Image (tube, rainbow, N blue to C red; front, side):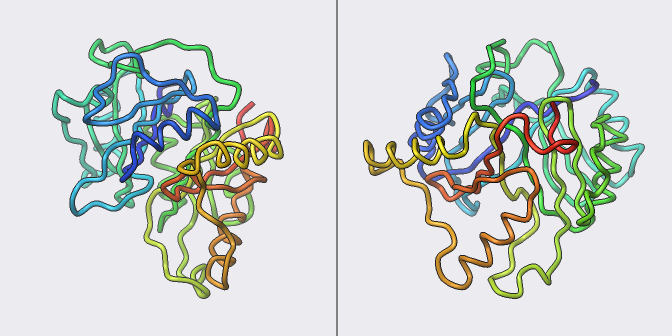
Length: 276
């Protein structure tokens, strides 16, 4: 395919510890040569996760995702052709995984890199066997889901799955990962504080949701710093969890130590929605 989802970025107050959490629970691998002062980088062998220290004025949690394309110039040309008001800017050379940063019609930010361009480092340049537990999807809650779905389909050739799946949401795949575009509606937040648009959650394909839950309990017993945030407590907590559960891509629901939502689905995942 012309493009693939190649990384997910999280801003974290506990970036090094959070990386160890993903290593311990999901078996992700640490990059061989990364810069520990700037980030902790882990990978499932095909998709990387860049856990970056939270900077002043920034929020913790999911920050953006990245796409690797066959031709950067063509990708940037397509972005501007789709909508001349959309922008893509070159990134500083210190970024080992991005040549450009851009945004979709709803200002959801993504990084762009080119396959075999020569400057990628860490897990973004390594060819690794995929881990048993691996990324399945990244979800973005956005105001104009249909328009954004058209953008990712036309610009990056991601393949639509099941249109809107009957709920106003759109799902596209690169053959490995699914990009879920969730329609943002104020009515969804009647029983809780409204959530801003942007990255919503990530998903993992696992051999057994029950086994992951058991491993999480055992992991917390081994290291109290490896505890997920509690879900479903109180009226607002229940409303937030109910909204999270509306995503059809997962059947298990946890968080990392920063509170990032993690959706769990057993192989092969929901038929017709998650790529085989």
